[in-house]
Image 1 (spheres, rainbow, N blue to C red):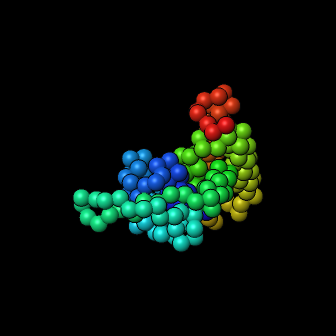
Image 2: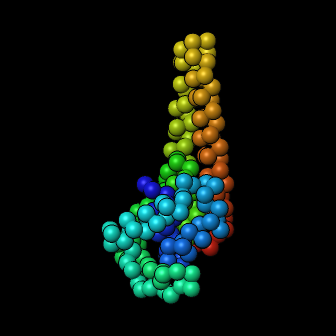
Image 3: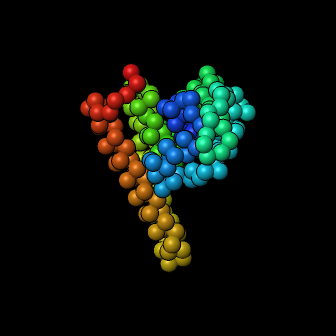
Amino acid sequence: MSAVRLLVLGVMRLRQPTYGYAVRRELLSWRAETWTNVKPGSIYHALKQLTQEGKLSAFGTQDSKQGPGRTLFEVTEAGEAEFHKLMDEALVSIDMEELGAGIAFMDALPRADVIEKLREQRRRSEEIRTGLLDMIPTFSGRYEAPHATDLLELWSGVFGNLSGWTEGVLARLEAGEYRMSE
């Protein structure tokens, strides 16, 4: 799954019809470059690719005083379906960039759907954490490969933190916080 594709489709849904630079500006205002790999070139590449795939369509052109007219885009039915598919993948992901992109647009989905997906994400995180912790006592030893045990401890801590963070978001969702698409 591409977090950039999800981010571009999500912003397009919020601001359509809009143009590439406006998508870029919106993502910059979220400081998305600090928690994703989104770069200006990746935004424009995603716009081009999504248009070629029929998930976005050119809506028209907006005049610009700073240069040539800007092509306006809107999300197609196929783009809407792609957005929902990517959201389903992102909300169960253990990849921070993908999960972050999903969280950014979770309010576009019904509360019950988001809760279900995040429970799955939490279950996966706990499963991975437990598996990593279970490996530590059976590992060949700190003296033969001391860094390997430390890495297992590091990653089990990361997945423990992810699970705890997800638990907090779930508690807020279950308490009715956040305005969601119902």
